[in-house]
Image (cartoon, rainbow, N blue to C red; front, top):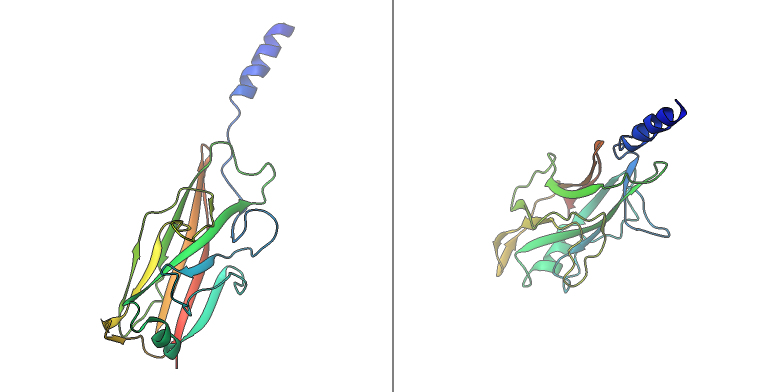
Length: 196
């Protein structure tokens, strides 16, 4: 009887279910310290000093809201580019006991937020979503979370037409973790308001 009980217990242990990911947060660091519920933001054209770029330090509860001066856009992009292409660097962490479940996969996503409202130009998403938990790097050939947010200005390189005061460009960055037990998603929100 004892040997049968041991066998049953062993089968139960082998059949233990894998939990779903939980307690997820996007950070701009993998080890050490940095900003939580935040991503780093960089213009993909690294020679441009973009007013959109940010080191993640001003996110609050997963949201970064910033005023972008239209004159600064003119200085940064006129004669250099007809669009702004933003890359995002992030790491998906968990505070759950035991960490991420075994076999967890990852999928990042960048989307245009519903609050976006522009009188000039258009927005789009380009690139291929990263499937890496650590998608922080975006210098050189690295492109962070893979997908990029694009703001195409009106006009042409010889004379760009920028968004108007109070126009808004909203971007959502998220990562979904999936294990045999289920899926969970963490996200951050970025909102640029254009000002004089």
